[in-house]
Length: 192
Image (cartoon, rainbow, N blue to C red; front, side, top):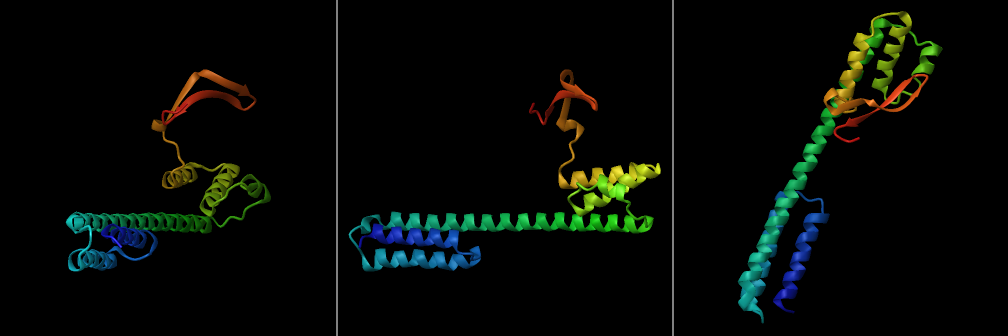
């Protein structure tokens, strides 16, 4: 078996270990040091037909071990940051739903059948509560500014609210007209 074959086996095992095994990057430092030392033992201790290239091969193996460690650490940091963002969004959602539940308890009103029909398409709990309060305020002739502010706040947090800067309307380009209004052209974030 030549140095190249041994080196190839070590490269494949190092890469596979870093990519496929759920092991922390700190633990893999010892593994990588062992693999580099093992190759040094085979190349310099036992010798071989390709010994004149052994220094170059050892350097390549050490570089591969280092690059895979840095990549593994980068993936771990990305996973942690993603999980932290998920927890933050989940916490904000729970907090908002708690506030909406408190608002609902304050008013103590029961939903009528007509209100329930109007909001039957609401999918998330927080959105449903906000829309229920909005429909109730409209039916009772009350101010809807508080409910609209809650909808805007939820839209900003969940990233579905379109800002004025993202939307450009072209009133001169009429796409269609009907009973409920006129449809005009526009751009959303620069796309027509």
